[in-house]
Structure formats: structure tokens, C-alpha cells
Image 1 (tube, rainbow, N blue to C red):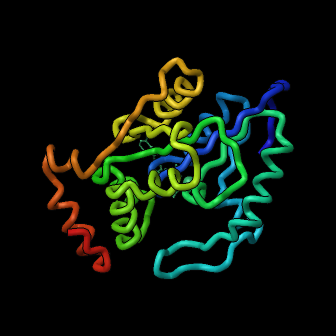
Image 2 (cartoon, helix red, strand yellow):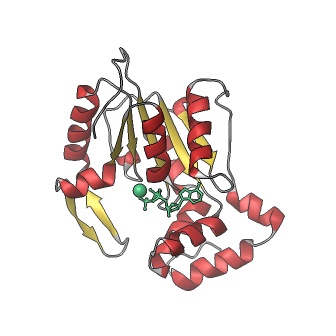
Length: 212
Ligand SMILES: Nc1ncnc2c1ncn2[C@@H]1O[C@H](COP(=O)(O)OP(=O)(O)OP(=O)(O)O)[C@@H](O)[C@H]1O
Ligand SMILES: [Mg+2]
């Protein structure tokens, strides 16, 4: 977490969240590098510093200690003289931050399924995450914690990580207006076909998810 940038009087805080596998870590590293800032993988900090309260076997996920993690991240942000990019799917659980912008990375459920498979996730966890992406879970979570006028969705499905980072920086620079991008995978899949197939896949792998 070294900062090599020149002194920036007003360092900015950027938050990057999204369903596992959408590319948060890959993209956040590029954004931080371009800004000469620091990149912080929130889950990594929580695990390495023991800021967790256990493990949920059902969710295949660690349970973070939101209070101590927020305090720790707050110290990192306050002590930084350069821009900070905090990223991870735990972002909606942390509090006490005033970000300049929050990016919610999105990915078409079919493409996300492939990315998670390539990442070696167990099939059940892939299905859970595909369902979460389909139902806008991360967006919903972030909007219940932070103001919507700071939040922007970016569709990563047909962009490589460098292109996603470049778009994120253009939005930050206001060279592209913070548009009301509303991603609706259910509607998209209804129009292009494939909704039945993806729902069948989710139900076959994660039977507790009865979303029809
Ligand atoms: N825009 C993209 N296009 C294609 N592949 C991508 C893109 N972004 C990331 N990937 C690939 O998808 C995989 C997941 O990326 P990454 O680990 O950055 O996701 P993440 O959101 O940080 O996941 P996690 O929540 O599990 O930490 C990696 O193999 C990465 O190379
Ligand atoms: Mg990651």
C-alpha cells in the first residue's frame, strides 16, 4: 500500500464494489496506479488483520467485523496524502466514509458465470453469485448505505479491465457525465433470450434460491 504520488492537497476516496468476479481487484489496481494512489483490497485487510467474526459455511464467506474494519480502513484513508481506492464486496458494510465516487461494477450473468468458473469457484458459489448479480444485490446494498448521487454502475461485460478503469477515470474527471445507468439483467435476458436457462442453472445449483 505504498503511495508514490506527488502531494495532492485534497486526496480523494473511491469505492469499488460489485458481485465476486466482476473485476473489482483487477480494475481497482489499474485505477490506483493511474492516479498514483493506493489500492486497498478490503477483504484482504479483514483476513490478514483478523477483523472477522467467523465464517459462514452456507454463504462460503467470511463474516467481517464491520466496526473494527471500518476503524482500520478509516486510519488508512485519513493518513493517506494521495487518492485511495477501497474495493471489495464488503464495501456496503463499512461506514464513516465520504467517498468522492462509488463504482458498482456489473457483469452480464452468463459472462460472470464463465469468469467465476475460470477463477475456480465451486459451482454452488458460482450460482449464488450469478443470482446476486441478476438481482442487483450489490447495487441494492450500496444504495442502502451511501447516497445514490455518488454511485455509478459500470458494465464490464464487453470491456477489458483497462477499458473499465479508463471509463471510471473519465467519469471521475467529469469528462463523462454521471449518467443514470440502470442495469437490468432480468429485462436484458428477457429481450435477448436465455433467462429460463440461467434461472434453471441457478435453481439446479442453489436449490434454496427459488426466484420463480
Ligand atoms: N473486464 C474484464 N474482462 C474480462 N475478464 C476480467 C475483467 N475483469 C476481471 N476479469 C477477470 O475475471 C476474474 C475475476 O477478477 P477479479 O479477481 O478482479 O474480480 P473481483 O471482483 O475482485 O473478485 P472477488 O470478489 O472474488 O475478489 C480474473 O480472472 C480477472 O482476470
Ligand atoms: Mg477481488
